[in-house]
Length: 395
Ligand code: CTP
Image (tube, rainbow, N blue to C red; front, side, top):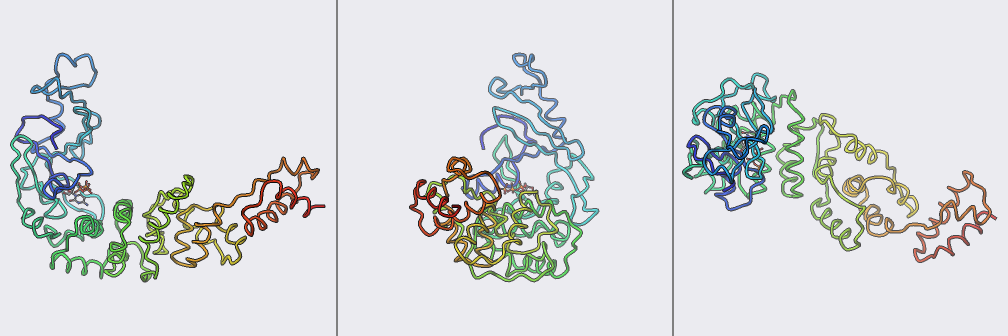
């Protein structure tokens, strides 16, 4: 955490970074909070003469040479500021108070620059509500976060927490899987109550972000809890049951296959969507075109039986589509494609056909398909063999 050398006793590390340091795990990001107005704090750091020529560049007085600080972005309504310091980009938030005027949506900031003890009230769980003074290293714990960290407990700060921000239900799952923690009994009851009475008017962009972070952990255990505890109901009102296939094992098996065959182009870049795709209905989530295509392609795959049909069904779709098909419809056919058929390609092309005297026409596709069918039966066919087959078919 020692990336910053600012001797101001109002600056604190907060949230994940403090939690992770106490747990001894690596942090994904480093959040800072300034007890007061962080923007003014960043702006008022005295520019150091040696950096004066850099426009917008600031430098803190102490340790100035090592710590040039440059303001990159200011978010006035939230009182946050992004700065570059010592080669790192960091966010510094102002302490603030918030209210949820519209439950399930972004809160409204009601005060910027409040005391730390009021800033803590807007946070999700006790384990994420610890502050550590940058100047002294002292931990400030208003909510019992240290105790909960020790006992591996995820606990909300108040009874309205999930109503205010239902994404916290998915966040709780994410943290429980990442750290092997359990929900405290009362928190679990609040979750159950919320899931029985969901207000679907919520920000699905935020829900999607948490789903991505949770499912990208590629954890069957997380997915099972997601289904069994009914957390999936945040996404769809349709009933979902747990598929027979162990998704984590399947994905790992496929990742290994790809690694062993050294086939680079079969890149699974949306692991989260494989899990989410199993829900069947993601109409509430704001999906990208690619994500939507993965699901649409899945819905258009029929019931391919022969090797040729399987090949044709999956030839042009993304790996995620094939894997969703493996989970929900026909694991055997999909695995056959992934492990074997996918690697077979014909070498014959249009130029070869022209050279043997076949004029370009829709017949070409028929010929390619015929040769492919033969090659699927006998992958060792050489290009010469393919040309012979093309002749045989056409003439
Ligand atoms: N937070 C919150 N409610 C949310 C999201 C965030 O109260 N829905 C607060 C928590 O105090 C959290 C901090 O904002 O610790 C930072 O959020 P984020 O970066 O999403 O999570 P981290 O706790 O830093 O965890 P990660 O390791 O996943 O980044």
